[in-house]
Image (cartoon, rainbow, N blue to C red; front, side, top):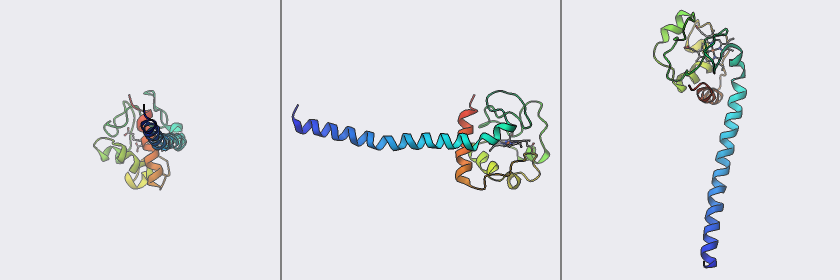
Length: 130
Ligand code: HEC
């Protein structure tokens, strides 16, 4: 192989890994932050098992109809929301629960920061996936 070709190949490799490394690091940071942000949720919610705590379990919450955990007594305002939870809806809800569902029993003050709410919702979506 000509030295010029070898140089080109190594330059390409450096280019590719150089671009990928920050993306991986970002992903890992986002996950770490998501985990930290969802710590308070776990006091009231089980994400992995269909067990009720103070709040309903959140197993498979993305794609699940609102207020549909078995034998959980939801508030009227939450039931009235209707539809299905998407990651985006969850982010909006946890950003400011009282604004999204006035009168909800979820006593969580909210992030009041959509960037954090999105990170938490993304982490929740991954952790609670069936
Ligand atoms: C202090 C306890 C508490 C904390 C902390 C809490 N929740 Fe909740 N959550 C509840 C309760 C209670 C409900 C049911 C609300 C109702 O019926 O109005 C609920 C409902 C929900 C629902 C709707 C579930 C369904 O079946 O429709 C989602 C999604 C949710 N919480 C996500 C979260 C996330 C994410 C966090 C953390 C950022 C969090 N919650 C923090 C108590 C809590």
